[in-house]
Length: 349
Ligand code: MN3
Image (cartoon, rainbow, N blue to C red; front, side, top):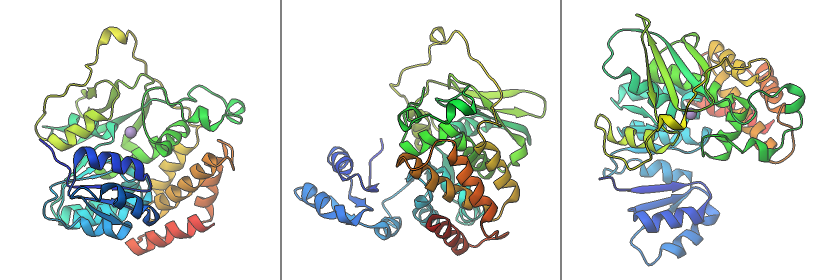
């Protein structure tokens, strides 16, 4: 039903080679140019073309044989290739939320100009998208669910000593390291509020975060008559990825079905915004607008990496991001170049 035309990877050559041999794409790209030879050697007996570097990734978006691009590069690095794909008229299945956070205005504008649909892959946004299908009236609000992550219920004293290993133990979702740590700090939910604002054209104040530890209700929409629609399912990324590919159709999946007898209680609570400060930083960033979400995102990417490297503690992630937001040069109407410059400056600090 689907075939892979191009596979891209950052620096994980082994996984790229394994997937290339399994799915036999026309071409592969490894962003890390030092890994080019390794990939080339491993695939030399196949017809698969091998490219290296970010520029090749951007260039290949023009290929006529590509019908859709799954944008799943982590972080700011995803912005340029995603924008290029949109300019080439390729529908986007968007997993890279940072692209929307940093440059939501530019990305949505470019998509509208090129008549390119952006289909959400982030599970919450897929749920919101599914809840909105067939609706024609303005909505009341979005109820964006959050699992609360591994540190839900902890106080500041407990959080002061948590380790990287603990932060990486997400209770429900199996995801990459960056997003798992963002989930633990609630920054992930902050990024998702901004992502939802741009994807669905709603104000951030009309997006309410609801902590739902079981991750069964993947998000909801409340309409002006008070009705609420939700999308539910087992917590797996495979469902939203498949729906972005198959939309507007639904195709058979062999994934496990949600069995309500395994979930005798579904609970909902308010997020602890005083302890997990990243959520409010994100609301502030989007209210301020301009390059502020870009500043926040870059500082968060740096802070998460420093936490992974053992250089700062978990609570210092929010401190680091807040300081960057207080001291950065504010640009009210940034161009794309301004955003690249902002990102670079924050990372060099
Ligand atoms: Mn999500």
